[in-house]
Length: 290
Image 1 (spheres, rainbow, N blue to C red):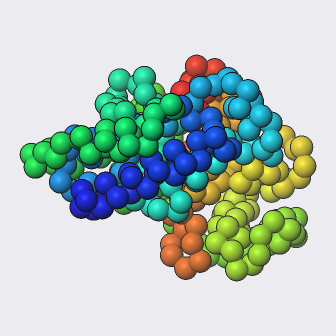
Image 2 (cartoon, rainbow, N blue to C red):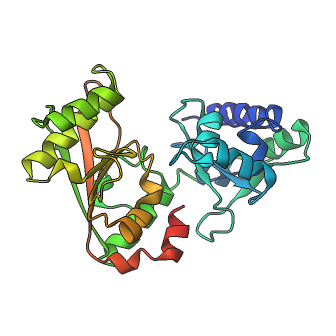
Image 3 (cartoon, one colour):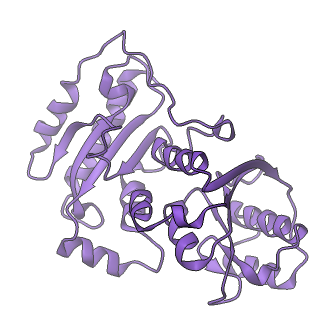
């Protein structure tokens, strides 16, 4: 992506944030930063990498969190509102104090719009900067790095290197499970034409083939059997990946299958994260993943 296009995208995010700064969910955002190759001045960038900060806990944050259904997170709504379905914008939350990220401030609550835009345009172009290296890579991430952001790649890589998680990558077969329980669950949640129905069916069929009791499965935020003790978890689009350590430490998760990007026709690429050392995912690690 040319730098000029990245600037246009950044301007649109800043303007949206400033315009909606007093409306949920953006009313909890205190700062917006840019990092990565754009911040270093590269003439071409892979993605526009942004970080937002929040003042939490705050009355606004508490009200937003309480208004959401179970396992829907304020950060998810904020990212969705700022990205507006544009894949070339990658947004992480609350990474300002992480030394691995060199942040450049764009917008701070209380600024006027012109100040924020001036900060953006003050970032000098540097033809020698080049695109940022894709850090924290495993062979299983190849070709998926545009969908799995650096923060997630880092946490998974660290867990694999610590022998706390094992990772496996494969494409799921396009089929439905035999179990009547699974079929009813899928039809209750999604239209048969939905990419999520396709992904859910493929995941459940795979687990069924592997001999997993589907009463023991938690699929994309819901148990197949309400309030069951589940050991096999699955999710799509990395929506619930941030609470995987909690599932492992508190709910007995033994494996998690992540369909990175469900579509109607493209291959269903899946990452399996199998638990090897449960104690690694302690409360401190849970905070890092969040």
